[in-house]
Length: 244
Image (cartoon, rainbow, N blue to C red; front, side):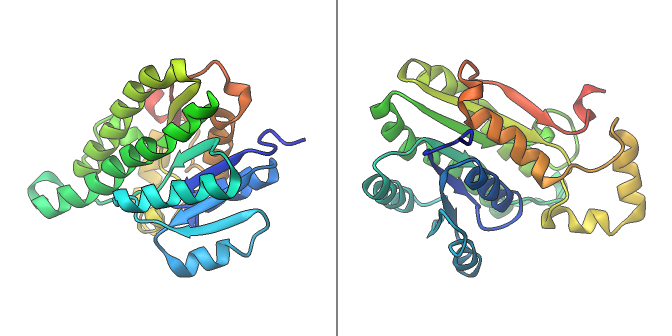
C-alpha cells in the first residue's frame, strides 16, 4: 500500500510545474488527486492521468473555492489533503512596484492560500483528520530583493503558523515548505544566464538548483501519516541556502 492509500487530495496549480510533480507523486502513493488550476488546456492533459481529476479554479475566488470543495466532498465523500501550491512571481524591485503589482501577487499567493484553508479545513474537521501543506519560499526568510513576492510568501508563512495552532485540536495539521531556487519554468530566465546560475550555485552549499521531485517528496512526507505529530513546521528545501 502507498503512503497516501485511499486519500483524497486537492493540489492547486496542479496542472504544471511543481504542482504536476506533486500530483504524479501522490497518485503513485495511492491517492485520488484533484488537480485544481486556472489553465484549461493543462487541466485537460492532467485529467488524462489515472486517478487525477482536473477542475478549473481561480484561487482568488471565494465562490470558486466554495464550489470546488463542495463538488469534491459530494463526489468522494471526504477531503484528506490540501496542497496550496498555486503561485506567481516577479523580479520587480521596490522602486519598480506599483499597487497593481503588489495586489496581484498578494492576492494569489496570500489570499488564495487563506481561501484554500477556509473552504477545505471544515470538511477535514468533520472527520477529525486532515493535512494542509502551504508553499512559502526562502525569500520570506532571507533578503533576496524580490519584495512583493517575498511579502506574499511571508503572509503564507505567518498564516501557516496561525492555522496550525487553530486547527490542531480538530485533528488537522498545517505545515509549510520553503523551496529555494527550483528548476521550473518560473526560473527559466535564471537558468539561461550562466552568470546568475553560477552565482546562485556558489551561494548554495549543495552547489546546484533543486528539482521539482525533491519538493514533491518533502510535501509527500508532510501530507502523509508519517508526519502525524508534525504541525506548524517550516521546512526549507534549498540545498542548505538558508543554513549559511
